[in-house]
Image 1 (tube, rainbow, N blue to C red):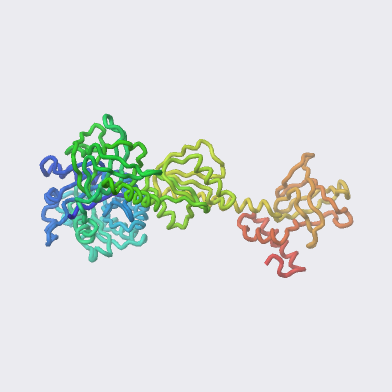
Image 2 (cartoon, helix red, strand yellow):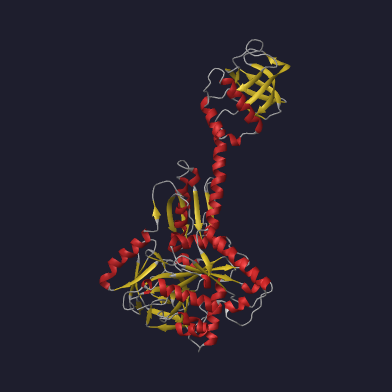
Length: 584
């Protein structure tokens, strides 16, 4: 039995994902008798007969006929449907509509969607939406290609420019694409269908392309055993008045009936329970409307959406896998579910960041992108960020401070205050989450390097002032001028390559100071030397930098001030008079 392909929409916010689905639904309702389109829980099923009426003679291109019974659109905004709903070895969606505003082009969520699609190897078509907003565009009530040809020449030029900007961007990202009517090989090129969710232009052509791609290339994956056990994924867990805790499920294989035993995943032991009720949205009822009407049914076949009422669903989690089974199959089903969950969750003792997400599918999508960027992961689980996560991140501080971070996708941070060296980043856009982490990592690595300089002798150059010898020795106290760099208490000082003393203390205007900047004049205390014997007025002294410290400074020279850079060159030249390979 060939089931309807499961289609998800992805793209940037406000580019028209929901509007395209709304147009398809509304048009189908208008063009056919009431109830021809079934709005199940979390899904819209459009039968093939309804699509034929909408597309008209466009479908005559399919010489061998149409074998799919219709199209099932997962009806959740944003990337939530795609990233949340997974099945073993991939994603529930058979094909994706990537919606792009033809006037705005690629945005952060568009790029994120493409990265996710690439990682899952999911087929997709591009809906270049909002063609009606191209300045001067006129609708002529013709089919899309005819309508394009009827536009003024200047507008056609603008239209082609915008379209091929998308083609160029897709090419940069590794995808070969073309306008749908110009494609030579659908196995090598991504189809771009210009659309307007407002006027409906291009929507029949979009449906035609979806049918063509799924029938030609996805026939094997659409084969479903309607008499087999149900396989699905939890879309949402909700409390329903009069029914208690329910789950909305996308069923992608098999069937389910009332009184069936089902097994679904949790973060702990899988839930085993019995179906007490199955509900589908009433025809024309808006499923996102809390007051929407639902019909009780005895059996549901894949592929569809259904609300399941059953005991003990309080610990259910969105995105978790679900199967039905006989009593004798419960233990193998639990093992299968647990194995599927463990394929995604990560729990190790190695160094790496902590990752949290709202669902198993979201977590898997995030992990795929993190691994592509070679970002080490120590722990990846579902749920909000807690004190336990902070404690796990703190364990990285001594090993690798750059992994002392927690990334949360679509989750809340429940930690009121945390270690300031632990970075907690939350976002509902994976793309932005990764960007924020990379930006923090870069800034933190620079900060760590800069702090590393605090542990070495920094380059400094001073001159003893004439007529400012306050004590000749035990210790010598003399006025100095800081010519370059920073003079710190404890800095060893050398003259002609020989270390003679170190700064014991410093005073400026009778107050003790720890650091003196370039241009400062102050009194310093210098033990183990006598002014007039080892040191003289107007002598120039340099910080006595050990060779190992010099190598560190050389590696981190980008953090030195310009005057420090000059001084370090002078110091190296002094040492290399006696040792030509010093610091090399």
